[in-house]
Image (cartoon, rainbow, N blue to C red):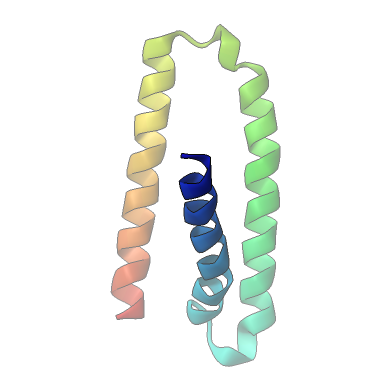
Length: 85
């Protein structure tokens, strides 16, 4: 299971930078990479902030937050998919 998880995460990690470059015009490639790494840093910082308070959150609240986050990610991917095609 750990090997499959590693392969899956590696596949996701390898595809994100080309995706970020595809979302911006070629003349703005640096901007796309900057947004990618800036977004990753922001996500890491927010993860640390919110996870420090996660033990105080009841299970149902955590479930709702997780479900909302999943829906936001799905909508963002759907919007970007329609822009690429």
